[in-house]
Length: 302
Image 1 (tube, helix red, strand yellow):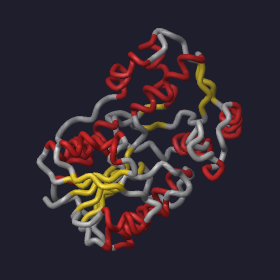
Image 2 (cartoon, one colour):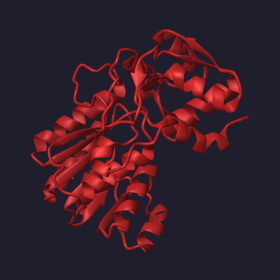
Image 3 (cartoon, one colour):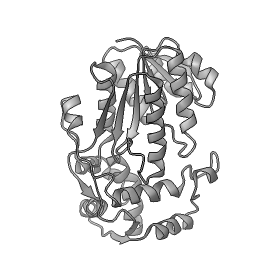
């Protein structure tokens, strides 16, 4: 199947995908700014290489010999499009024949209100314009994020402000997103395709928090707030509003703009997408939000 480049291989998604590809006997080129975190992949036979998305020349060298690329979107919301452009240009210069990109539900919509989605839309266009065959994995909201980053503060406070209203989203397990990436990268016939990677059911944030409350045996008061009130809540936590104002290596590496417009996107129906792509491509049914919550319940403050 040729050598498969996995960017961001020290992150959770990249590491799990690289490991899954090695399980299938694939030749993996694992990229990271911190190669020390890839020692286990190297021990299993992966070709571990240092790469920085802000260093085009280094990226060009790091991608040599690769036939496919898993381009995992970087975390620098608002300024990551140029990083992604550097990666696509390095891939093209090295003759990469297939780019698999981790996008988001609604990634193909120019009019989407989500700030994070703007980056994904721009990146999808860059990849299309490169002429390299592509697969866009348009992932839904991670069930793991709902079960930890959303659930734990809500349980601690006994309440949660939220601006997503009663908009629906088919939360998906990161495990299923990884399984999709492994299948697409190691298989054939996925070129020039976009998959909606979703869980098995559409739920609202109030329904998800009610599920947390029931499983924990603790009340959670969901407070429906406006977008501006949501900004004020994050202001009270010391979160920067704009990605450009985030302090590098600071205590809070994200901006509230991304979170507030994400909630707005859910409220306005942009995430109300339910797909059977996970089962069709991987051959297994996607995990339910309930099962992911059960997995992480031990982390909850009960």
